[in-house]
Image 1 (cartoon, rainbow, N blue to C red):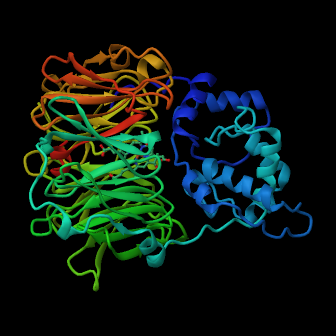
Image 2 (image 1 turned 30 degrees about the vertical axis):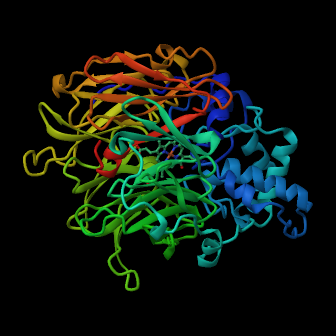
Length: 597
Ligand code: DHE
């Protein structure tokens, strides 16, 4: 393991700009005492190397609407319903990502009234104002909350938490619509689109996706989806596209229609991030599954209509302490290619569930003890092993999807791994490896994935080297490419967040020297001169000859998609269009259905 540059110190302006794009980037708060000196606290905060980004549960805040204030015990000022509702909204948008919806703690500390009343109003007020070196943002001194709001929040935390409603079968069925019944759908593809080379592009703040042709770069269609739409996944056949919004709304789009459109939709909770479909041979297009942050649950649905079939709560014991957690969120979900199973990451309990979908009435689940705060991950090149980040613990967990067993847990040596689905390539020295970059520093870590051919390296972090800077979200390559692309989307420096690093994997040495990389200043090459454009998530075309990057800007600013020729590393095309509002994730139909990355 070699040197790593610390995360560049963010300027206040850059931090504020980032907050505008992403919402609150509430950091981990395993804190003890609040810092007393505001200047020192602010300084501590800015210099913190690991600027984690945590969920903003703003859909939950919206769904909750007006909330009745609970009674206040003696000695604690009561809040009016309006004050409690305002505080609740602030809490869900800025605090719940770390401290939990029910205030029972997640990556941040528990803030239940038994604890907060012990600490008292002034302690809480000072903590919220100044933050702490351990990661609690300085909401007051940064100006993000006014003095009145800080006081309101300190008071709010002394009262009982609001419990948002559950979302069970009745609520799901009330939102479920089949807009075009399966029997009324086409029996063959009715358009002349090259479906395998189609890209579904998230238009985050527009609540839409754009379908873009990979050959002509033409925006074929823009389709309304859920709020702050998050990811797209494909059915195994490549016919149905599933899109999930942060508001837990799923759109199922039939790509065979003359004009592809939503044929079924459903809402599966108040907050969600993940969706997947059954991929095992014989089970193609049979089921879809989605996971929710709130309520903490996943649901298995019919793959043709989205009819909800089975809802499973993820509430339960944390894998190691075996203490109850009331709201373990569902993070990444993948479909196994080796067994008729879904692989479900449960964040707060640190469990990976392998859910057998062959008999939903007699559901069999293998529960694997992994590590807390599981987030995203992907398969190795053989698709047998699932490698996933327990990001707040700086670990990678490896699961054998064929045997249904934990294989290894390895420390990446970096701060907050964030692989997306990762990147598989063959290293000249170490053989097949899978890569992740990090949010909290500039390192890229490689884990060996070939237990047969390279047993000494298997499931060990065999190399780590610096890329552009901290704030990286995604790495990407393709079986036909010799390049590894590493973004630095959340880096506070504009030149860094607007660029991508490219490594030549065929010249990597593995002798302790850092591989060189080229910097492609894609935001500049796209001619974007306003805002802080952030280059995010490379995605290859079907043939593996081009890689597409989003240049993600503010909602009212110009964004773009830049197509890079993988052979020459030249920009081949720039897609700019007023419909491209905040493009982020891109999902090529062929690569997504086949887990090619
Ligand atoms: Fe994501 C994947 C959660 C913020 C773009 N994101 C995922 C997955 C999870 C997740 C659990 C894995 C899904 C799967 O594989 O089933 N993301 C979260 C959050 O909780 C978080 C940190 C904060 C939030 O409030 O949502 C968050 N994500 C973001 C963004 O701000 C990004 C950069 C821009 C955006 O569009 O919202 C973003 N996330 C993505 C993308 C993927 C993703 C593009 C899929 C990557 C892939 O290649 O598969």
